[in-house]
Amino acid sequence: MQSYKELVVWKKSIQLVISIYDIVKMFPKEEMYGLSSQIKRAAVSVPSNIAEGHDRNSDKEFCQFLCIARGSLAELETQLIIASKLEYLNEISINEILRDCDEIGKMLNALIKKIKTDS
Image (cartoon, rainbow, N blue to C red; front, top):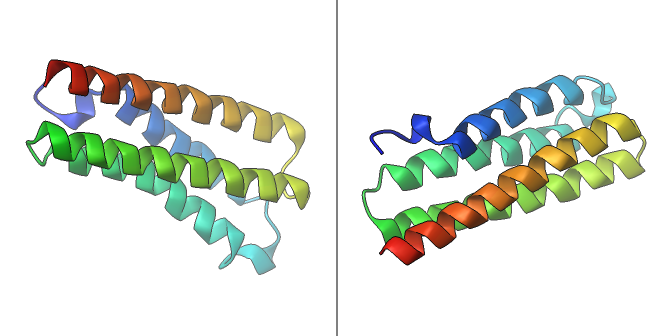
């Protein structure tokens, strides 16, 4: 694989970021620098860590960064659940994004397993 941009998990996590930026626009203005900001940072961290790890040119480091991406994904899911409990998001929005997070998490796990197996 030449570029991280060819990874389906990277592409899906970029789409997740776009979805996140769209939904946090619905949050109350007082959350602009609070939960909304944290959610956006956690979302951006997922594809960023995939890209950085890939370009380290070491399987061990790539796996480490994929694990960090997985951690950011868990952080994002937790923050989205909090936002839902605070009624900043409707159930349809949260369920769709949580499904996307679950799919990305499974893809990250599979990629980590594949890299470890191939090493």
